[in-house]
Length: 467
Ligand code: ZN
Image (cartoon, rainbow, N blue to C red; front, side, top):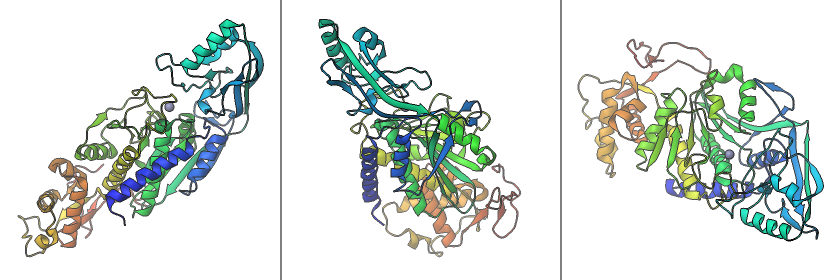
């Protein structure tokens, strides 16, 4: 296997290339842009594409009609396209009803959207289900057009060649089975057109996280969802309501490619294992980070953490949505996301996967006073590595707190030693017959639930952490 740093750089580059490939596609809540995006992801991961028909009910919502667009423009009197959808799919308001008319500037103006504070940027606007239409353009271009229009009372041909008709809502799902049917659910939205941080960064990191997970030995089953925001998550939850209690951990991925520090928004529960895993990984990263409490305001965490589900799902971001000026504008482009930041977000997700996978309880087989490490070959096992003392300290922590009640994450938090080192110490102690796994039958592939017990069959009676 490649050196971790080389692998990290290669993955960062691959994620940015994927975002670059997907960037021009005109995605929306429904339609062929989502299908095209999923088809391209399908070359990297064996994604199942699902179609939910228009009109199907999902809790309080109905699957909408499908919107597709072929072309859109505003032509001046000379027949020149002054606004041309072929140049950028942000130039049309997404969800616009079809229109082909010749109208005066004063009639056209209310349908034009700009950002006067950022006159060079094009805003991203939607008008689904409103029977409205519109165009977005830079304020600079708007002022030029207005200047020309006022000089002569001009007319413009406006065309939005779009269709809104019965079809379906499309989403992608990948199940990566593990030893147990307990699931880790990772979700990202796929409904934005040419916007990079929101949302191609999430798509790229989720895709490459799926590739990573598929190559690892797995205790958990992993489910990756690529959903149109809001309605996609609602449709998925509605179709899978009876099985969602399999979800033991999860997170939503969005805005994970910009230069800002990592931000983790906790699950609604606030003390889920995934919340603790992210907190530990962010704290031990040595980088600035932000840890925020749940609020029902951002991305599909709102649906997964609605009170009727209350799934243990957090949300990983960098600069949160709406807190960076380029958000929902043409400046959220491929320069805003960089391979190193995508790679950093990906690496944090892989570290959390390792925590969840390795977070078990162990029992010290020599609990009365410290065992002698030398004669058992432990000092030799530590070798001459530079972090030898760190690893040795980790072994002392693992030995002391492996009483069947504390998990490795408990020990990592309490010792302030990173989880990977704690896990390595536990593996070494198992190898040297000083530690054994406590089998936790809370949920197994067979779905059997019983008390945690030691591998030798002796029940652990006093286990305050059992849930
Ligand atoms: Zn957005």
